[in-house]
Structure formats: structure tokens, C-alpha cells
Amino acid sequence: MVLAGWQHNSKLELTFDKAEQRSIKLEQSYKLLDTWKRRSDDLLYSMIPKTVADRLRGGNSSLTTCESFDSVTIMFCDLVGINSTTVEDAMDLVSSMNEVFSCIDELMDKYHVYKVETVGQIYMAASGAPERTKTHAEDMADLSLDMIHNIKSLRMPSGGHVEVRIGIHSGSTVAGVVGIKVPRYCFFGDTVNTASRMQSTSLAGHVHISSVTRDLLPQDRYVVTSRGFVQVKGKGDMETFWLFPSTH
Image 1: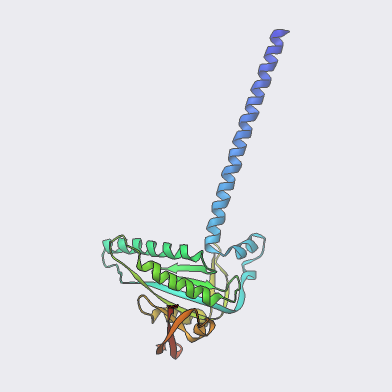
Image 2: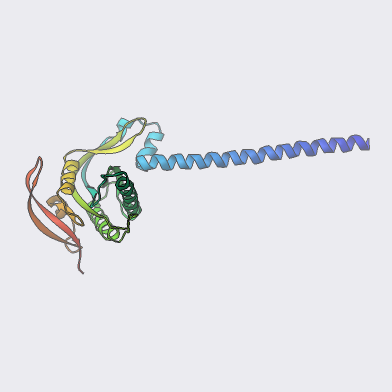
């Protein structure tokens, strides 16, 4: 009987050990699942704003994400002073773009600004959508001036320096999720086109803004000087302005 009892206890201990091991493996599986879920969420939120992504995950179709916004501010910037005529130049270009765009990404977190996309050497951002805010022009102006200041101090992998030229315009726009395999939150309308023109006619190390954006900015926080009239494709002659930080 003693031997039988000992064998019974041994079986119970073995069963308990196996159950404990299964419990540990199950817990590890849950932790791994949670880790991959967070990574999946981070990837989704890098392509689509969180508020919009949550609506899609809730069962809404992408068509329901399409909204019109009466007043937003759009910014485009591109890198100046680097090109790629050789393989070595191309490698330097990619390294420089990564350095600059990583700097801008970090600055985004300080303001109510959404990174829309990067295409080649051009970086696009928006403020006032999908989260509506009355200070979208100020937020974008502050971000842009910070970009000019911070990027000047960056040392590129090649040892040189790089500058950006920035263009900003404010107005109405339509935004929504486009695509299925690689969904993106995109902006459409004349405001986007005009902001792009502000960037393409800007100068290195400068923030070029339209009169609409200027009128939305508080006069005591910035220095705004007229550039005069600029020929803008599809718009004709437009009076535009340079934006500088306040000297106070």
C-alpha cells in the first residue's frame, strides 16, 4: 500500500509538473501574441491616424473615413543640396534622408501634426485633420521653424550639411483612407496643390507661406515678411510670405 501510495503521488506530481509547464507555455504564447499585436498596431498607426484606424477595426468601411475639413494646414518640405549621380551618392542620399526625416518624425510628437507620407525627398504633413484644431496653422508654423533650426545642426553621414525648403498653405480639403493592401490616409484638393507649389518655389532654409496661412497666425508670435508676387502654376501671381521666429 505504501508503494502504491508513493506511485500515486509520483503520478500526481508528474501531472502537476506537466500542467505547470503547459501553463507557462500558454502564458508565454499570450505574451508573444500581445507583442505581435502591439507591433501590428504600431504599423497600422504609422499608415493611418489612430482615430481613423480604430474606426476601421470596428467594422466601418474605408468609405466612411472620407471627410471634408473646412480649415487645415498642409506642409511640404524637401531636401536641398544633395543629389545622386553615382551609387556612392545614392547611398549618401538615402543616409541623409533617413537622418533628416527621423529628426522631423521626432519633432512631430511635439505638435498636433500628422505625417501624411514621404515620397522620394519630399515630406508631407497636415494639421487640423483628422483631429480638428483651431491652432493648426500655429502648430505647423512652430513645427516648420523647429525643423529649420534642428536640421541645420545635423551632421550628415557624408560629413556635410543639408538644408530643407518648406512650403505651407491653409484651406479646405478632403481626406480619407485609400488602398486595401497598403492603406494610406490621403489628402485631396486645391489646398494640397497650393501647399506643394509653396514648397517648390521656396528657398533653402526658408519657410514659405501663403497669405491664407499668414492671416491665421497671431502677429505677435512670428515675423512675417512679404516675398512679393510669385508665379504659381495653376494660380497665377500670388503674394507670398517668408516666416521667421519672433525676435522677442
